[in-house]
Image (tube, rainbow, N blue to C red; front, top):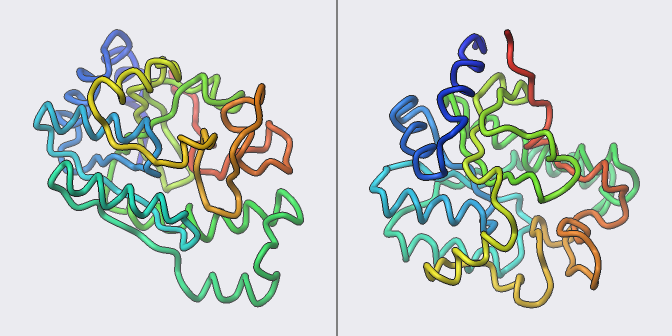
Length: 241
């Protein structure tokens, strides 16, 4: 897949708000675009907006096999509220068995390299399958989430999933805007947020943050902030002029 349209698409959505971006994405890509959600508050807001606008966007999530009970409860709550079924993808059990039998149950704490290997098997490989027939995916990435996302754009081209457009409609939202919307619109959210969890992934890799820590401090807390990405939101290619 080429990226000759990326500069044009950037111009088309540069001044659009989140509702207009979702309409644009569906008009542009139809069934070839999907919301990819780890059930964080950001992507559930996107689901809520799409539902209210009657935009029939498919919703995809990756079940890594190590999600918290509260995350499974939330999946069920979202499906019931929006009268929908979230498409779930799982890791290849053979890859999991090989990794765990070779490296142990908690090899992801030994080094960044081993943690990324675990993320690749549990997250990236399933997402590659999920996006096999897609051209674009919609994420809940915001600039204020971490230093690794400051350079994100409203639309990017990712080369780590065989080439897809990634659309970030809430890119310029703040944490305050997110929770204001959730409260005002009665949007479901993970109940772990009520006890100090601000960014939620796999249960062994997620903890509540301490006072004064940044939003993603509870993810892979044994690593440097610059390393704290699983790979889903990395390797974005710059616009081709």
